[in-house]
Length: 292
Length: 147
Image (cartoon, rainbow over all chains, first blue to last red):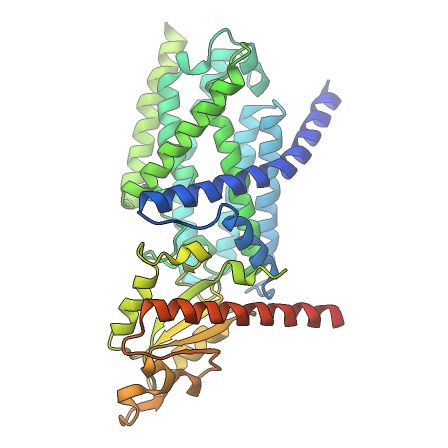
């Protein structure tokens, strides 16, 4: 049994490593075109994120120290592993922990450079992790209450989508998703457009191929987070994957809309609101399921 | 195929410009001209940038800054002197503190004169710079293969 799980996770991880960058890249390209249209611009070609990353890998290799690239590589590796665990139907709780480990490596990479700008970014990234983590953990708990298992695959045995019983948890995840996708009101640590109050935060000292790896990591992360959203909408029925896909498209469009319409907030607001949402939305929903 | 030309990220530095050219540089990235159609992004970080847009002349105060930004940028990189002051010093060329155009501090690849330089001309200059980027990228690749 254990061997089977390990093998499925391994195959899932390999497949995720091949497919997620492609899907994530197209998603990022669409994101930039839709954002541009919302701002009254034409926007870049669909494959612009791909061109960007290819260019970054063509740039000269330079780094302030030897360890930065290792940390970023580890962050990418664990992001891919988290995706593999999730999409092979593995343990949701493990997936959550592994993706957090990936974030921690990313923060370590920024701290290792000793640059004041990168350190500000790293400190803010830590605050972002602190802000969204309770809600993410409550999400895993809520899925356990609905399916009776931490396995992602168990959601396909439900008679109705999980969102029907854990709708409040879904709203809570929707709130922290903006932090996880690094979208505007909560893009404190690093934003996609760098002319902000700190120069690119976490990635200040990352350049060339290292920055390229960071971009690929974000593509993989985004695919994984969209998978989490989709998980709320699947059940045992034949149309479940279509329903999940529609939900993912709608949610991603909503995130782009939020990104383009809200100004960045201070970390205090992000922290308080994220915990409040986790406590109210997650706590109430879980309490109702547990005691009623 | 070189990808350098497909995603020219720029960094903008105001040497001692009167702000005329700076406003035009930013206007180039606004919806009307939409530099992002060609993949142009204003990065604000020399380590991420490929094209260095300098406005204004070089003087005793800013020559060190111009050199520092240039040195922090990674190859392949291109410098565009935006506006007549950045090209030659312009009307300020014989001021007591002005050293001259940007080429007195760092190698300049493209000159875009004008007072103030127009967004159309800036786009032309960036396109010329992008061709230079491809050349440098190809030379880097050839050197790598030779080594």
